[in-house]
Length: 111
Length: 114
Image 1 (cartoon, rainbow over the protein chains, first blue to last red):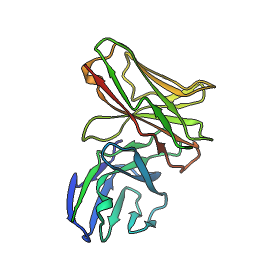
Image 2: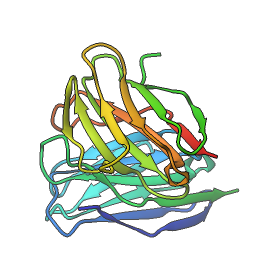
Image 3: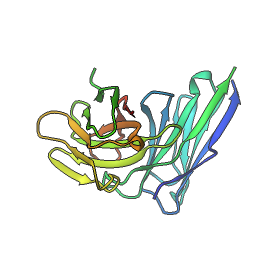
């Protein structure tokens, strides 16, 4: 039930773009994206619910494919503050008790 | 601060002792989740509670671990007779419990076993 994230790690220069993927073998009810900086709590970024949905948050946006089995997080013109580990959390129902997190993607943005 | 409050931030125990981790959910939230995170790894679900009820404890080890969320007071994650392998960061999250609501995380408790 745990989603699969890729890549495991990304290193960027400031201003470069990155894409982080989150995949499931089953159709999902929703996808949640979080960012965690070292030694801190995960911080909620956004939720996607509908197949084909795209949602933006500053220069960070995400999509949810039509089959609702894959979501991608897009980071454009990356800033140093984007560094951290990004997790997707996926739900397969609306029961509130089945969200499971991927292993995370570590993003490092260098000057 | 109306966010999720966890204490202590750091806890050191010797093997065989008990560890008690506390979590006060965000104001208005009645749903609490506990996760365990090893260094450089993801968030592993442990247990989901509502006030006075354990809804899903499928991620909890069957022995030594227990959780509660009483009518009054914080949620408690209790680890009895700790072992070195219990060393980890334990995060608590809370939500409104309604469909599609995000989970809001506390700053975690770093448990170290000597």
